[in-house]
Image (cartoon, rainbow, N blue to C red; front, side):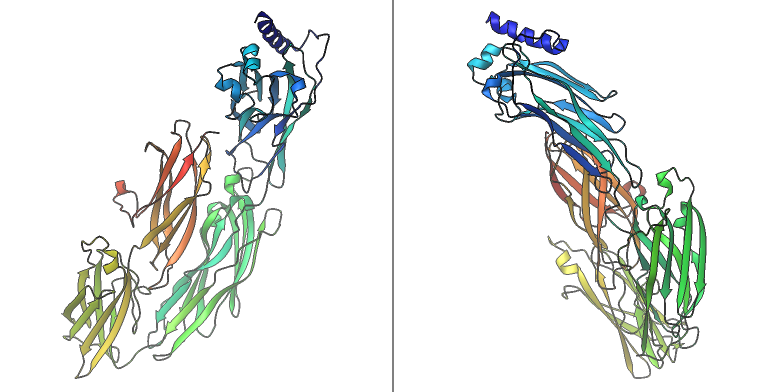
Length: 599
């Protein structure tokens, strides 16, 4: 027993002293101490600053003849690039049997963040106990892992460049049971962080995608209206410095009245806006100078309006004539400050539709929404309503476009499965309008959606000089914004990891509506451990009676150190605005789970 204690003390003295005393017999060995994985290469477009990763210090090719009982090393890195977060002996390490036998002696486990190194010295408290219980000398059972070091990425490379540093093993020492050092090989690791283009590309779109008018019977056939050309999903890393595009249109149906620069580019810096109205297209070019070229936040990012073109309809015929033309984006070029082309996803074009004017006995029923969304025109649909919304139906009665007053207008409304049928009447006023209002029911069965959600049908009739004329209208009822799902990019996270989520949702609204999304993460004991908020997100553009689906990333929620290990639940909600500001939820929440695990 005294011999074993002397061996341990000798081993520790050798480690601390840098092996000033050289034993007469130097132990030979074939062991390799190495960093695993040897190359730790990351890309900015995939792995953001603040992400963490771990490396293991591993011993391999250990033989019984090595009689390995003690390990020491230092591992250095560049502290301007990486922050050391943790140094640990993980479960299943080379020391697992000693840990289970309560025989582990951690002489030193130092993590120096400022200077960028760890210092590790570990052996067994009693070599005799280790030999007797069969786990000394050390081997690669259950693994050859001696330690695990976790790093956080703290510095990004410049564009088109990279940063790197060695994960440098120095002062490595292995000792046998007699206190003699064991010769061994050392293999360092490498960390490299490379700038890469963002994973998603920007694209241009026409907004709104569809514009429809019921023509007046005389020119101008439509009021002036605006069409915006927007840029979408622009990542700041692209450094957008210039762009140009053409918007084609039909000169028989439309006339350009004005072209104006949008607010998006000039909100980040100085711009030069150039446009030309040619025979059948509008040409736009924007050049950009950031306010501060050394500040990455100065470059444009996100989505916004580049230019607004004002049109007016100049041609129409009598109903049932319909005229349409595409508003096509073409010859789009995006470039960065080096005049390098920026790749882009396919553009989203627009469409203009004008429906022929109507003469004779007419009734037109529509809702209280603005023109373009209210169903004006023969048998046109209206934009959607939510449960318990107030619906006001107005019938406009005319003869040869002249209002007809004091006429009884009959309204009949059917729910999708005829669970609710509503009969109402109203009398036209001096301007030919008759209005009735009623509220969407929300009955008490377990699933009122089955009764209420879907397409509602409206019929309006009026007798004008012994001839009944009719108009119909449809609208959809449902959650105006509906959450479909939320899922995590990864199933498991360590404490300190940044979580990433994808929410899928849809809207049945053609009109634009603001949505505030919230994600609250609760750990296994229901403790809220973080939140993500996306405020004033704009949805809309769904086809009338249809729907439009979206996906959006929610990021930057970090698992805190004090979170409980186990299953965590994410709750996602969609509000009109924050409840404290008088907002309410558009729809029921959606949830998903992840696992918070130990390294």
